Amino acid sequence: MKKSFYILTILLSFNCFSQPAEFKAPDYEQIKTDIADRSSNFFYDTLLKRLKEKDTSLTADDHLHLYYGYAFRKEYNSFYRFKDEEKLMKYYRMDKLDPKDYDDIIKLCEKGLNDFPFDLKIMNFLSYVYRAKGDEALYKKTSKIFEGIVDAIISSGDGKSCETGFHVLMIGHEYTLLGLFNLEVSGQSLVGKCDYMKLTEGKYKMEGVYFNIEKMMENETKAFGGR
Image 1 (spheres, rainbow, N blue to C red):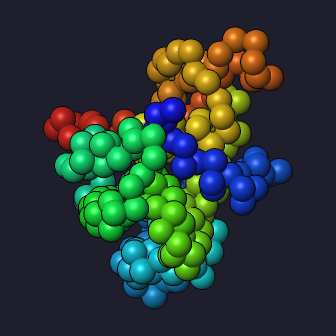
Image 2 (image 1 turned 90 degrees about the vertical axis):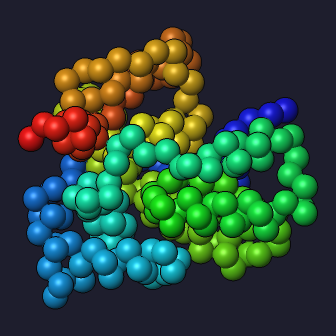
């Protein structure tokens, strides 16, 4: 059975993706201030270096500043697509990975994450391959980073309305969350500053999930010469 996201089931075993009792929309102005302050624990260059080194001591606040702070980086591109995505897709589509391909896959994944450190699909796949290869140390480190970023997104809302939608920086992150919660989508529409994902009718208590895409919209406006 070919399925691109079969790896998600591995990470779900951590049982860390339940909706928190409290959520709070990101304070973007405060985050912007924090990540620009060299004396702050949240200075972005320092945090990003720790992320790329797979520092498992990163806190929930660190992950929050890393993810949402990226929206203020010049390299943030809401249209981003990994240039070697097709090479990885070959492996995503396989029924079973060949152990001789593990090292090549790891190199591709690391290259992708170096270009865009919040590519959750690649990060998830990398974690899976590390475990398949028997490298438990790197599996745990990569998984913990993945979990930290996902938790940051989940803590930003409850998805029940546009006002309380999950804040995301990429469309792909919407599908990562939907996959983690095993939610089937039957339709998609734009509602104000939110993406509304309509769920398959009759299967869930919620009719749909809202994702706040305000930072994506701002980024796209800049890309097309807006202010």
